[in-house]
Image (cartoon, rainbow, N blue to C red):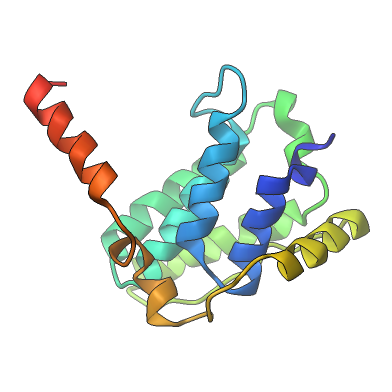
Length: 170
C-alpha cells in the first residue's frame, strides 16, 4: 500500500484541506508516524506534522511558533532522502513546497493567517478522501472549536503525565 493511502494519512488530508482542523490533522498523523517500525524525525510524515502544527499556530496568532515550525517543515520537505521519493508522489509536491515557502515569507512579514491546501493529483487518493470525509464528523472551519482545539479537550491525562515526568526528574 502506498503510504498516502493509509487511512490516517487520508484523514489528515480531510482535516487539513476540508475544515482546516490542523490540530486534529497533527494528531492523526502523529499516530500514523508512531505506528511505523523504527520511526524517526527524518521521516516525511514529520514534515506534514510540522506543517499542520505551524498552520495551527499561525491561525491562533502565534507568529513566532508558526514561523519556526513552518521553517522546519520546509527544511524537512526540501531535504527528503531519495529513499522517501514515494512521498513526492500523488500530491503536487512542487506546489506544496512553493506554498510552504510563501507561508514562511508571509509569516516573516507579520501577515495574518492564510490557509493553504495540499493539492492531490491521484484520483484514487481523491476518492479515498471523499469517502473518508463522509465518515468523519467535521467541525466548522474557522470555528472556535477548531481554532482553539487544544484548549477545549480533556487534557488531564497529558497534565498528569507531565507532572509525573517532573517528579521523576526526566
